[in-house]
Length: 536
Image: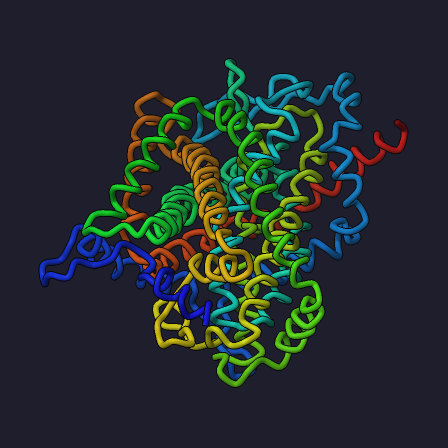
């Protein structure tokens, strides 16, 4: 009975409650204007090909096969060198940075103009290994771990968890490749500011392989998509779900409630992002550990409080991964698609975005940061996403909502109402521990805020690649970015998911082409770094 009492307080639409009058409020007007574009973009990016009678998005095929190839080619680096990656983050090999090798000077061209290159491979960068990891993790460990896991399970049932975990393990190898390339081909100007990421390893790396025109084209395409992704999944989705939690927890009403909350988020984010990567890194290195302890601590407490049911939950995950319930659309393939799709959104392995943050690291050895980068999907998907999934599955053991019965991103609840995204996770938390949904709300706001900060940097780097590095360029991007913070809080979850999913997944197309051409350079960097470690 307690569960159904909770519905009366938590089963509120995922955004601001619509006004009872026939006149549309500001939030609804914004949503209606935005939805057609979101639907068109999703259909374009998630185009499918028929395989064994099922439509599978081309983008997921590229991600899965690419990650599998890198895992095998690099000798299961995600497993064999997991401990090495931890040692690098802890600073065990920092002594190597004091006597860096002196590489042959390189001269790069961008659009025919000579630009500054990596001046001195020793101690070039703006942040340390931990700060780079914290910034990147804050961009990946976000509401995708809370809201998108709920979405995946709502659509694909418990079995989607298995495929999310597998996608996370394979994604570690992909992340290693793109982060290594991010450092190898970055640019550092005379003031010590770092510019890196797929835009640079696509343009510079492919030129080195004799594909200059292709490299410039892919770099420009990536930069355009990255700007869009920073507005969508890295910003609008975050403010949307944070606003949803705040509205529900405090019972707020009003036609423009979401917009007002979004404006507050925009002001707070603006204060931080004006300071650039160094200020963002200083904030994230404090916020990320705190929010991780807050969320993971609460999640583990819930799991251990129901430890006798955990084995049943994992048994259900394995069973439903291959033989899902009849209500799940697409059967086994549909479950697999949901798992991989949500994992891709959450950890962004293959999208190349995190390589932008890792490029700012202070190191002489690109492969060292590649090793650090492979920890991201493990933290993000294998640990955090799995904990969220287990809590939701435990909560739904009595059939609180119907797997597969989802409309506009919201699952059918036992009382006939619908709930979606982060609100399902909130209900699962509250059902386990009275008052814990307040802890979740705090974690959601911190997750959202830190992800917005990281993606503001990713998008700005892409924007500067396209339009130059002037102060006007910088300010223009930040204003547009903050407007999307407000927009995201005003529109519905369904519209945000369509736009955000497609924007982040679209990055895979240009990025994976580059990775599949440049991976031999990564192997060379890795061998050199491991040789130095073996001599230490």
